Length: 542
Image 1 (cartoon, rainbow, N blue to C red):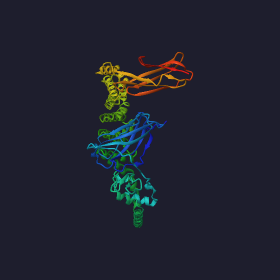
Image 2 (tube, rainbow, N blue to C red):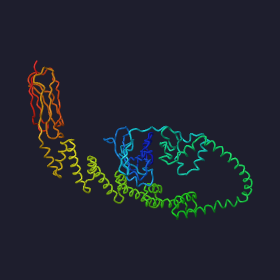
Image 3 (cartoon, rainbow, N blue to C red):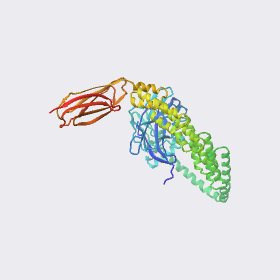
Image 4 (cartoon, rainbow, N blue to C red):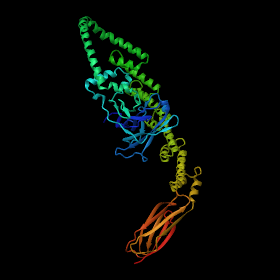
């Protein structure tokens, strides 16, 4: 069995684009956390045509599918919102904020549903999208030109060279950057990676690369001739100092590097110190100091609330000092941060794995309670009830259960969905708020039966037709009716019509059997109370 913590269920790529979109989902992955048994959606989002301060939130529309391609949620989609975008410090985000999905999800379809701007305006993606063309990889350049390309980009800002992936493309209305993003022709810099359009097309141009390659080779040949002269002179000198060099390399250099690493460690420059300690292998206590520098770096991440980075370091240190304890502490604080941000599913997933740490159980219940209240406010009554029922005797859940049922019943009545079920809910609330008076009001609403039989005399085999309906004050009330037709020595299978709505018209056709003769009657009754509402006598004659 694999010991891998995360299993990648799906790579998420996008082959279409909206040209003037203020933001995009660049790519993502669907992961299974084998430790917490959670399904996590990890996405990279980019702010494109606006400043961070101009965007308040981005809401995603997520369709979760089972391994057979069926919707996990009955309504088809769920939604997730990244809040406070204008407080972020960079235009690329999301990868460190996994979205917890239903455990049954094995595939997803994700798109931006809406973007709320800081001025209150809302942007929604248009239906029309453009399909991205296939771009060739930079590596498709001939070998000698590819080598020259690398020389050219080494002259650029190092932080931007990582964005060179594809050969850029020009089209009639837009151009495609080396990072793969589409841009309008008037854009001088890529809206995703910021690279300059002129530079991108210049350093990937074959003629440009060939000319610079020619110059490079000519310059290299001149330098080689100079080096050969120097080497002849230096080689003689080196023989004399070789012995001294061995002593310096084996003893003096490690000592100098060790002191340098200690100095960097004292100045809290952990990465530089760690790199030197690791290069010293078993020199003095370098191995121990490597772990200590990592440990303090993890503590620094934790202080700065960079929880994922802290967790990764403490987990890599295994049983060094109290790393295992600090791993849990970082998870705990991350869960608190999710709870403050109202990301309840993420908080619950963390606290449920930390049952014995501090008040994790209490915080898990609190996150569930807050999620239930949010669902209640959003009128997702059944989901809210499911949560409140799982929190038996926790705080005011009994009150919230009654309130949820009450609001569900009131909403059903207001929307004229199913008054009968609403009345049953109110009846079971046993006097909560004004549930009794509302229930009694709707129970006492007047209604009456209205119907007729098409005729009274039939020939054998002729269909019996009854048209009927209910008259009353509320169209959401429904009644179950029973229609029974019979004679002296025969009867037709009774028909039960459930949920007959007030105000609607219905027709029932009984295909009479050819051997039925004589007098008969059709009775229509309230199937719940047995009360007969109408009687229609008829006769079948030869």
